[in-house]
Length: 510
Ligand code: HXC
Image 1: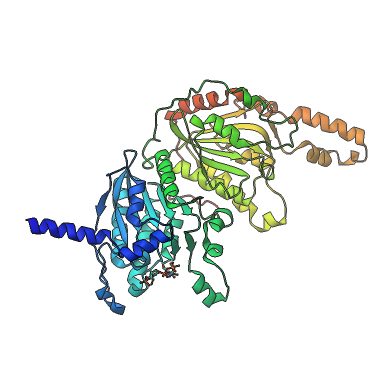
Image 2: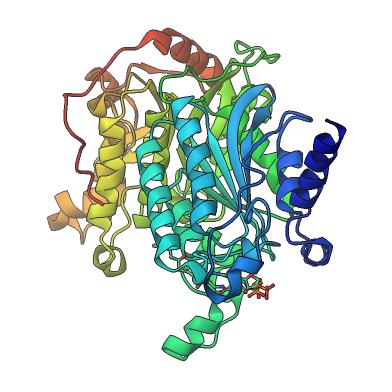
């Protein structure tokens, strides 16, 4: 008996070493943790249950029969984050660069299946070079099986990918099908193929950072939803995110104890909107004052900053916030902002997370560059996402709600449940200058007449009351009571029931 126990210990010790001490040291040298260290940092202490520690690849080509390493480049299993169950896998770069063999794929598929069957989030920590070249089509087949599972789990359980090293091929395509991708600055890269292959195929000389670093994917491509300075920070932030998310599409949103009263008024909000309607203000100030303890998890902070998306809690329960940001491009809706918010709204709707929308939008951004880039289709994505969403939707118009953007931003007409406006709201087809120039074109040479028309237009249309008279706004509220009104609204809507007509799936304008 004793010998068997000793053998088990010895096998475990070897497996835990992955690609060996030298490769672990190299990993640390680059400022990266190993796969197992990442799991330990991410999960509650002592909660990790590992699967398939002794799995080895079955490849014999290119001398591979002599290079078997227990675990085969990925550590898989489950554990808890603040007591709640999560499944995970962590690619081990020290073993064949974390590349994916047939056996490695089977390990990932096993936890994907378990996560789906047991209705809990799955998190992948990526640090890997894609399909194991020595295995050829067996590796490609393995990826396709993983992709298929990504798709089947989409909208059923949250799927999160954290890119923590150089990742290529299947190790970027699988993350691309998950709900969120986060990266680590300076040590992680995402590309279909690396700089060497790029040089060979296109003769383009490019660094890994320029091709697919966090700086590119959080600002230009919008592939990544956020980036952190190091592994530890990324892992701790992922705990924060997981805490906010429901376990599955049939679970309630998580609820934690809330220590901040919701009926306290906040007088500072009464002066948030500047006297001059063209002056910017920071919409994040409103978000931070409405959510519990100002604890906001923002998504895509550095991309399309003219719209803010993220999670917070109200009365201890998760809420998704979408808000036009007057500080950037006056909060206009362009293609990037529309795509960013549409995806966020759809995530919230998949997982029963109520959506609070703050509106201050001068319209869609006009011009050839937007039109050539498909603004109509991208804007339609956000319209589509809000219109199909059946979760509780609470909207507050703080200032401008002009034109089509008024319709799009969770208006009453798109089944907004509670639509409030601040007294400073201006709900109209467009601002005064543009409107007067069109409908009083014949008076354009007469400054006095134009001033009269402008005043008349502003008095009549640049207020919340025309909309309120029609019931498009449920109530004009005092800014200082916004947290209380939203909290009461969300409480009232907890048992909301609304379903869309049966369909195989919709055909969102992709
Ligand atoms: C087998 C691999 C490998 C791979 C890396 N290694 N990628 N082994 N298959 N795909 C091994 C290396 O041989 C090396 O082994 C070790 O991992 C570390 O790799 P390095 O190149 O030394 O590291 P680094 O310089 O940091 O570069 C990392 C990298 C690069 C950028 C990931 O290795 C790379 O470009 N790899 C190939 C990427 C790729 O094109 N993959 C196939 C994609 S196709 P030793 O023993 O020397 O330490 C794909 C299909 C999926 O994935 C389908 C998509 C739809």
